[in-house]
Image (cartoon, rainbow, N blue to C red):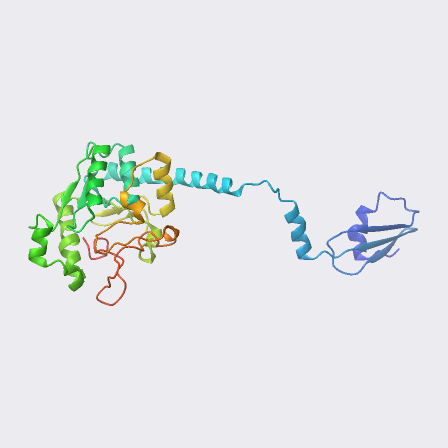
Length: 318
């Protein structure tokens, strides 16, 4: 008795038939090759195989997909689960910071992620008793809405921010008289030093900060793409939202129905100085680096590269 390899492969399907019958069977086996035949005892069995291409298989599989599946609902569930995890991770980071450091602080600029952190600090009981102090840098070039929103969140969360601005300067008129209203055009590094970096460094020293909580995230852009939640150093840095995305921040605000900076409704994804911050089409807000795409408009570093940082978070800042 001769049995071909193909017949051996399909023989189990034929055993239920009589060994004395002549059978002709057509099966849509996913086999390659031409039709095969084999003699099983006294029976002559002819197996005709049909080729089914990959496209046909795909069509068969596609036809089995339910047409009433709501993938949007699935994605919504995934986002809810993701946000719950991110919240838990951020709260854990903040609690560790509060427990292990003597004077943690949060420099707050009132953008979307900063509002998320304020709310998380409130949830762990760190604001009203100043377990975490809030630093607010008034560059003297802020939108009026920013100062108004600061007063709103101070009242909501029962804290008072520690405000710092250019040394020896009490208002914009004094600043213009001493440095000129166009310093940011003539020398952006000097502008940053006077209005942002020096006041920020002075705030850290005044409050004896040993851990700085901040709102930097990986999706802000390439210079922040590898952030970790904790950074060691003489002054530790804590980024509780490091692994969040801009959309996660908005999901959080919507989930808890929190107030946000009023300029977001006017097309500003992020808000900085009035003279260099521009609106951005909302379709671009949630792209990689999209949140900060309206910041530092028209500004370049001295080496000719586009400006993406104000100086506070660059390596030279203390």
